[in-house]
Length: 368
Picture 1 (cartoon, rainbow, N blue to C red):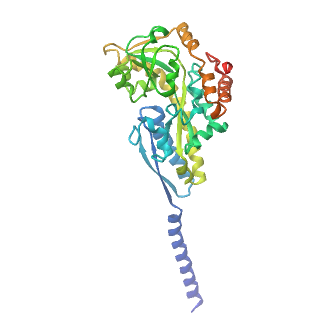
Picture 2: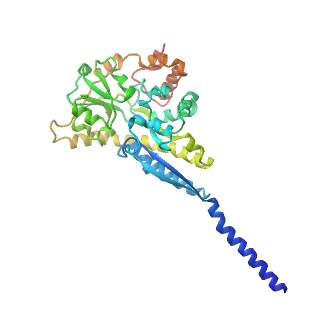
């Protein structure tokens, strides 16, 4: 064989190997992860909508930027397509969905220590501060981390809501007007009615309209950004601003088994974007809050009775604040065997004050 022919043969062989390798390597590197992301509530609510408009595309963008052939194939199922409000935790825990919004206010039995915000009302209306503190506490307090972990979940980012007001069938002019009224409230939020004489009725934004319309309740303690898209003002036209405070209500979480199947660099992306989702939620809620109140008044101007917006006076609000039982102390005592409940309340209140908050009631200083 001539030298030239040998060179051609070697070159052809090398080229063939290179081409076959180029064809095989991408196929080996390509890896698709099929993930379901879901919620019991609809996308019109900010904490659900941002799962679709921010979390999913941002995760996709960052995963693609890794240039490792990873791809996520999403199945999005919001608005109760897979499960209802009473199964937000178990559906993530059991893998019905890989990622979901967990409404831990309805999960006091499984996540008792995470209820610290519910037993410390009347602190701040700034949900951005509430979420910042909640994310910090979930990162730094092992007992809170454990509550997610033991329920087979990985915490991704805190969710919260704008400040709570009253939305009722009939006017509420004084704190005493609550006495004997049936008021809808989700889970442990019903604690805020203790001392008022009102009767708490368990429910959520997805049930309030029907409950009030049918007489199961006479109104609700709720949030403007939730009442507006669900049109609850149509059956509860009297809006009484109370400013009970913004609230940490749960978080977006991922099934621990599903999370464990992701490469470490994708796990990091999911967690990083989860925190950004939480921050964006705070900003979004603050932007929408005032507009939601205004829009309800405008849309309800021609209904009968027309939507009416009034403020509970400072004096009547103070009566509510001071008439409440010692919620934090009672809660800390009841949960002492489950973890450092008292220390969690202190950490939370101190973290709020460090951010400039002046609570209407210093719950941590009343601990027994």
